Length: 396
Image (cartoon, rainbow, N blue to C red; front, top):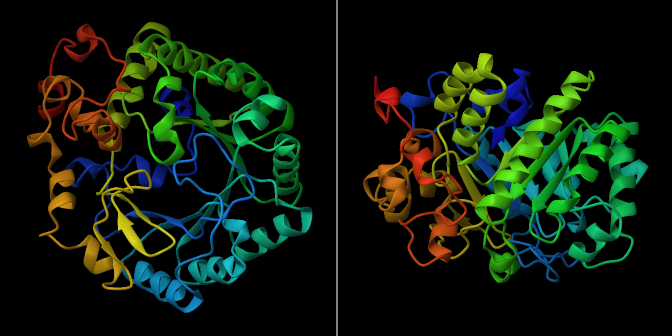
C-alpha cells in the first residue's frame, strides 16, 4: 500500500505503524523485528455477488477449515506475532462462525480487519462488529450506482453497500471503501471522491488490477500507462483538495508500488517542499512485501505469498502450522521472494527505484509469462527508471 495522504499531506494513517517503520531497511521489505506478516485469510469461497474482477473466483461453497481448525490457526498466528488478520472471502459475513473467530483474534491481541462487499451490514451487524473489536471494515465499491452494479453482477448492490457503510459510520465502526481500477470504471474516480466527501467516509483504497481468479480474464481491461498516470494524478489532486477543505481523508493506492516513485516525481512538480520526506517514507515502506510481510491463507488452509498468488502454495496449515511454514528457510519460493532483487531482470533489474518498489507484483509478471520479468502494470517510462542519482541515493 502507498499512502497518498501521508506522502503528500503528512497526515498519519491507520496502518502507518506497519507501513513506515524507520528500521525497515535493516529488515526485509518493511517488516518489523519480532513481528509476523499481515495475514489475509479467505475464510469462505461463498459470496452473494458475482464480481467480474474477483481474484478469488468466489461464488459458492462452504468453509474448508472448520471452527476448531480455524481457532487453532488463530492461536498459531498470535504466537507468531502476526499483527493483523484480514478476514476476507468470498464474502466473510456469510461464514456463520465469523463473530467467534473475530472475537478470538482480538482476544489474542491481533488487529481484526474485514474485507466485505458491504451488502450484508445491517445496523445491528455494524454494532456487533464494533462490539467485537473489529479495527476496520473495508467495503468494496467499484463505482456509483449502476456502474458498481455492472461490475458486481447484482442490481442494487451499490445501494446496499452504501447503506452498509452508513450503518458502520452510525455505530462508530471504522469503515472505508475499496475501489479496483479498470477501463470499465476508471471514469468513476471523480464520482467516488465526491461520494467520499458527501458521506464523510474517512478512508479509501484504490486498487490496481491483479490478474488472478476472474481478474485473469480482464487483462485487456487493465489500464495502459497513460490511463494509469491520469488516474494517479487525479487521486493525488483530489486528495489534496479534500485536505485543503478540512477533510483529512486517508487515501491509499494498492497493488502497484510504481505509484511510490511516481508520486515522488509528482511531488517534485506540485509539492516540492514534501519531496524529501516522500523519499524517506518510501525507503521505510520497502515496496512489495509478498512472501515477506504479507501472507495469505485460503479457506482450505493453503498458504500463499499473498492473496493473489494462488497458483503458488507453500504449505497447508492442516499439515504444518503457519508459523513453521512461514519460517522455513528452505522453502524455495519464499526464499526467492525474500531475495528477489538478485533474480529480477529487464527494466526492474536496472531501475533506480528498485529499493523502494522491490520489483512490484510478481503475480502479474508471472501472468505475463515470466515470474522474474517486468510487471506489466509498471507505468514508469525509461527516463523515470533511470532517474539521475541511481541507486546510490538508497545505499549512501
